[in-house]
Amino acid sequence: MDAILIRGGGPLRGKIQVSGAKNAALPILCATLLSDGASRLRNVPALRDIETTAALLRFLGRDVTVTAPEVHVAGGSDVRPEAPYELVKQMRASVLVLGPLVARFGRAKVSLPGGCQIGARPIDQHLKGLEALGCSIRLERGYVIAEGPENGGRLRGSEVYFDIPTVTGTENLMMAAALAKGRTTLVNAAREPEVEELGRVLNKMGAEVDGAGTDVIHVKGSERGKLVPFDHAIIPDRIEAGTYMVAAAIAEGSDVVLEGAQVSDLEALIVKMRAAGVEVTSEGQCLRVCRRGPLRAVNVTTAPHPGFPTDMQAQFLVLMCLARGESVITETIFENRFQHVPELQRMGAAIALRGRTAVVQGVEALNGASVMATDLRASASLVIAGLVASGETEVRRVYHIDRGYERIVEKLSGVGARIERVRGAEA
Ligand code: EPZ
Image (cartoon, rainbow, N blue to C red; front, side, top):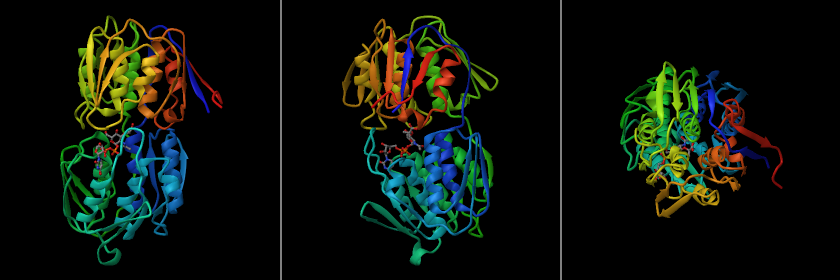
């Protein structure tokens, strides 16, 4: 297994191009199941999760060509609506084929994703929503078996009240509703930019989606029960951009421009970075991050969009490890998303964990160490810590990083980081 080796040191300077958004590309790839014909996605990042989704679509019977940053998906109605455990266990987001399959083919058999490192992550809201659209749902030997009304008939538009704003739950129901008869209203829906992006694509396919990006979404399913393929360029990845903003801010004297970052998607993070004493300015399609003085401690509580993103919690916590004073980081979305903390403590960070809260006491410096990545965003936080730690940091299990960061070593060394990937470093 590969590892990433970082020699901590000076400020970062230069430009980083932000890639397309992983969490927008995944649902949109699954939306290709809603129509026959050939769809094209552009600005798609070269990531393991994209390859896993492509493998799943091929298993379902689609013809998929991945030549990043483009993905072509083609095929007709000869689809086997079954997503096996072997594929779903690799990536929870595979559950996003459930809505499109049952809406398009009247039935679907999809492996339950099971728990993950950061929490139990049930899909009860997805299933409740599909039942509201007329599906019968049963769980059998670790699989969800969903069937349209009257033995696999067309879904019916309806009202769905989410007990909790769920991103992929909202996306699954938007896709199912796009082929349902009549209108569907999704209340307490997730408002993430990736949900809004899916709404744009479903409108290109012939559905009528209103309100994506707000907590009430209206979907009028295609009259003819048919949707058309699409050609679409994916929005930039706000979490990748946010990760590099923090990487830039961690070392005094840094001055980094993020090309293609969408400012409006990063407001909650920008507010907290400025409160910490980091200069963040937007220049056209770019964001500029400069660090000219000491960091101030800032409290953060994660929340659904437009609140502070949970996917930036680990990275921002590292920044607070080097701030003057005490900061309190509260994780409200996932029950087990502090696994980066013991690794940061091994690098000399002063953090006390109390349930879903981390109390961070700023220290003068971190020291390099061998550390273990546990999940995608935790691994990004360890790389950021390694950029300023004294000596060498070795981040192991980097396959977590490959899931969500395109060419992270090249991008960081391009702005002056001393970072390299060591092939087969770990037995
Ligand atoms: C999406 O996951 C993202 N993944 C996650 O990003 C992100 O952390 C998360 O949203 C929150 O922003 C993708 O978009 C592919 P949720 P998702 O359903 O949809 C509970 C990354 O690092 N819940 O919004 O799975 C759930 O347990 C990944 O890129 C239920 O209880 O998250 C959690 O506590 C990690 N029942 C909360 O809601 C349900 O049916 C929010 O989860 C669904 C969710």
